Image (cartoon, rainbow, N blue to C red):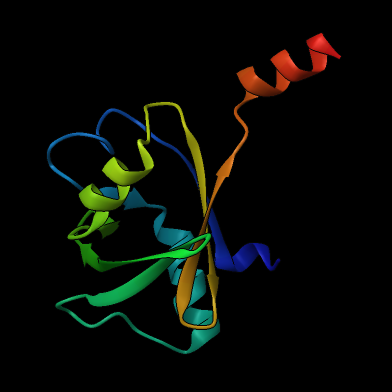
Length: 115
């Protein structure tokens, strides 16, 4: 996987709030735009998040603070039962984000101590 096409986030209380936005790292999304030769329209764009065999449509937007996933994030987050501290990864492939969960440091330590 090309690291320039991937973003990894530790979810915060803000990401999971009723506000319903997922803030994305500006530099990572700008790298994706640059690699694709694409500029996000002023009113955002619908993008697909593929999670195993399920597909979710969300709005990717930009404001003065940076990039975020708005509409559609709340449904995705609730269906995945995401929690504060979960580490997620979004990898841009072709025309969609591929979603994956990453092991947290705590779970990795737990696995290695039980081995």
